[in-house]
Image 1 (cartoon, one colour):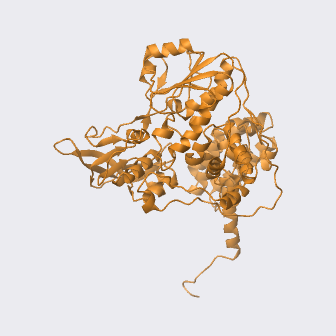
Image 2: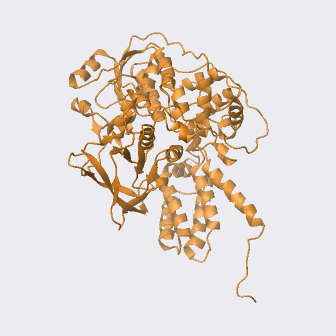
Image 3: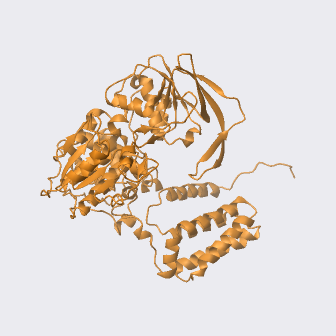
Length: 611
C-alpha cells in the first residue's frame, strides 16, 4: 500500500458546507424576541456534535447539559437545576481536554448569567420572558434606536409614494434627510434578508425617498398648552426634542452657542458626505413648526441656568460632546498639533485651512478620523493615519475606511503615538510611533495591543490631527450643581435627580455616540417632558401602508450606490456618493421580506402607529 494517497472529501460534504453557510446566516439574522433558552439549547446541540467524545467532560458533561436545558424548556426543571447547571459548566470548562469542550461550556455559562431572568421565568412561570425585551419583533425596527417604521416606508418607496415615505419617517425622526446620507444604519445589522443573501440597503433607500419627495409638509401642532420649554443645544438631539414638543402644543425655545444650527451634523460631518443644502431641508421642516431660535447664545454659568429654570416650565440639555481629548504626549501643545473636532468645526463655519503640500498625520481610528483625513486630502495634503490597533479593529464604518484608502490615505496599523518632535520654533517636525503587537481580548471583546519589542518609527510631518475621542463641555453646569460623571450628565429618562423639570440626553449623557442615537434620545426626552408637564400627547401619522405582496422571493444581490471617481472627488468637497437610479431603487425596495407581516412580526409588535 502506498505511504501517501491523495484524499478528497465525499461529495455530500459540499452540500453540508452550504448548509453550514445557511445556518451561519440564520444566526447572523436572528431577530429580537427569540427565546434565549431555546437558542442556547440549539447552539449547544450543534457544539456537542463537533466534539470527538473522547474525554468524559465533553462526552458525558455536555450531554447532561443538553438534558438540563431541555428540562427547562419543557417546564420540568426545578429551581436548583440552575445551580446544578452552573456547577457542571464550570467543571467542564476546567477539565475538558480541548477548546471545543471548554468553549461550549463557557458559552452555556455566559448564557446562564446573562439570561438568568429568562431561565427563572421558564422554571417558575413556565413562560418565556423574551417577548417583553423589545417593543417590536421586526429586526430593523427594533435595532433602529428611534424605532422608525422601516418596512412601511420601504413599501411606500416601492410604490413611488416618496412624500408619504418621508412623512412616515418623520413620525419618529425629523432628520429624515440627514439619516438618508450619514446614518450608521444599525437597522441593517439583523435584517432577515441576510438569511438569503445580504441585508437591504436601508439607508440608501431612505436617501432616495428624501431626494425625490416634492412637497412634504409637517403635521399641524396640537392646541397650545401654554407651557414653555428651553432646549440648550441645536444639534440633532436638541432639535428632535424641540420638534416633537412643538407638535405637542408646547412653545419651545432653542439656545445654540454656534452661528448655525445642526450640531455635529454641520460642524462634524464634511460636505462631501452630507451637503449643507440637504441639512437645511431638515432644519426648515423642523423650524416650520414655530420653534423659537437663539443662535450665538451660550448658557454660561450659574445665573443663566437659574434664569432658564425660572422662565421655563422644563429645560432639556443636549449640548453634545464637542471637546477633544488629549493623549498627554510630549510635544502635544506644539504648533501644528490640532484637534480633529476643531478642524472639522472650522469647515462647518466655511473656514478652510490651506494644507497644500503639507504632510499630515491623523491619530485615531473612528469616523472622525476618516472625516479629518479625507478632508485634509481635499485641502491639498498628503495624509497618513496612525492607529494603535489593527485596521479591522477600527470603529469607523468600513465604507469610510475604504473611501479614505481609495483617496490616498495610508493607514499605519499597530502604531501607537509615542512623542512629538518639534523644531526650535516649537513647530511640529515629526511624530514618533511605538510599534505594537496584538494581544489578548479585552472587556469590549477586542484584541488589546501592547508595545512590541521593536524600535520606534520616525514619521516626518507638518501637521498632526488628534482624533482620539470627545468629551462634554459640562463644567459650568457642574458648578450649578448638576451631577456629572466623566464630564457627562448623570440623568435618566425621567430627568436629573434633585432638579425637577431638568432633563438631559444625547452625547452629553451617553458620551460620544451616533446621530441616530442622539435623535432617539431627543424623541424619548420629548415624551417624558410632555408627561412631566401633565400631558400625554400622541404622535402619529395618517399615512396608509401598502398591503403585503404574496409573491415568490428569491436570492438577489444588494444594490450599492456608485461613487464619483477617486481622482475627481478628492479635488473638492462635492458629494461623493451618487443616488440610486429608479431601476435600482425599485429592485432594492422589492427585496424587503416585510417582517411587519411575516415571521414573528406578524404575530406581535409588527407596527406601532403612534407613540
